[in-house]
Amino acid sequence: DAGITQSPRHKVTETGTPVTLRCHQTENHRYMYWYRQDPGHGLRLIHYSYGVKDTDKGEVSDGYSVSRSKTEDFLLTLESATSSQTSVYFCASGTGRQETQYFGPGTRLLVL
Amino acid sequence: AQSVTQPDIHITVSEGASLELRCNYSYGATPYLFWYVQSPGQGLQLLLKYFSGDTLVQGIKGFEAEFKRSQSSFNLRKPSVHWSDAAEYFCAVGAQGGSYIPTFGRGTSLIVHP
Image 1 (tube, one colour):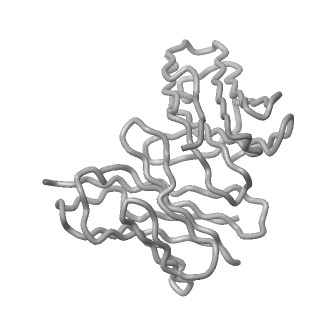
Image 2 (cartoon, one colour):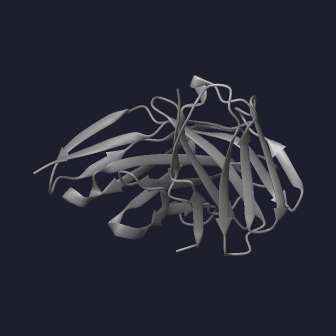
C-alpha cells in the first residue's frame, strides 16, 4: 500500500478559527488531492496539486486554501472555519491525473 | 466534463448471494473508469479500473466489472458476497487524454445479511 498519512485524525474546533490539515506521502507521487466526504454527496474535490507549488481548484474550493512546498506534503487550510465545513476530509496521491489514487485514512473535523 | 451516477444509495444482499452495483457515466469521448471500496472508518481502496482493451475487468477480492459503451455503464459484480464485503462502493470516471480529475459518484452502501 502507498504510504499516505493524515494529521490530525480528529479535530474539534470553533467557528471562525483557522484550521490546517496535513497530508504526507512517501511514494514520491506528483499529484495530491484533498476531498471532503459528506452523506449524500460522496467525495467532492476541494483542491489538487500537480507538483510543488502547483495547485488548482476543485469543485468545492470556496473557504479553503492549499499549499505544497515539498513533494511529500500537501496542506489544507480553512482560513475561518464554519459549521458547513464539518466533514470527513480525505487526502489522496497518485502518479497522474488518470491514474489510480491512493487514499489516506481521513480526518474527521467538527466545527462548533 | 464527465459525470457519474450510482442509482442505488443502499443495496442489501444475503451472504453467498450474487451482487451487482450499478454505475452510469456521462461523457462524450472514451472514458476511463474505476471502482473503489471504502470499509467503515477507512480511506478508499482501488478495486479495479478500465482504460482500454477487454471490457470485462477483473479486480481484487473477487470483484469484476464490465464496460458497456452502448449503455454508458460500468457495473460491478461479485458472484458470491461475503460478510466482509459490507462497505461503501464508489464509481469514478475520467476523460482519456483530457485534463479533468476523475469524478466520483455518490457511493452505494452495501449491507450484507448473514
